[in-house]
Length: 116
Image 1 (cartoon, rainbow, N blue to C red):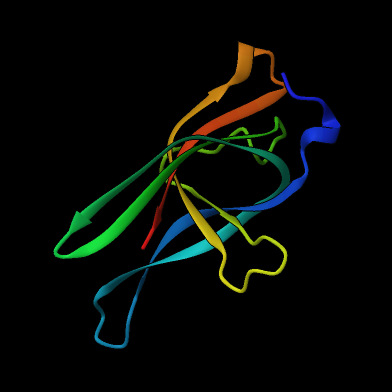
Image 2 (image 1 turned 135 degrees about the horizontal axis):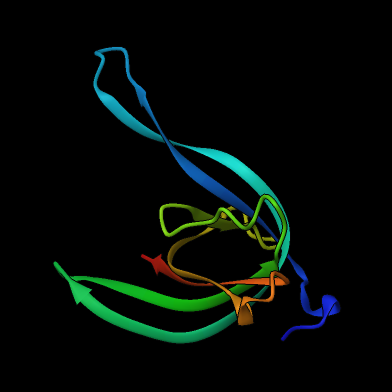
């Protein structure tokens, strides 16, 4: 289990929202559910070529404190992290979510990040 001082990354948890565009076609947008301090641990990195373009994927484990706002996180949500000095936010798609040790203290997510 992480120590509080290890939660050194500020992340945004977002939920998908379906809206309609000017032609009444469905469009998915994202709504901020909450912000939290997190620990991000890289697990696996892969590179592959698709249509003559290199695609890198990174699997990470993200741990946040269990709160009333983080307990509702599901794989439908996503995590954003904007590191200092980087203009573009990292976007992590959540694959699994679990209450670490079912103790209602920590939420742990395994996420994938596509880097192209």
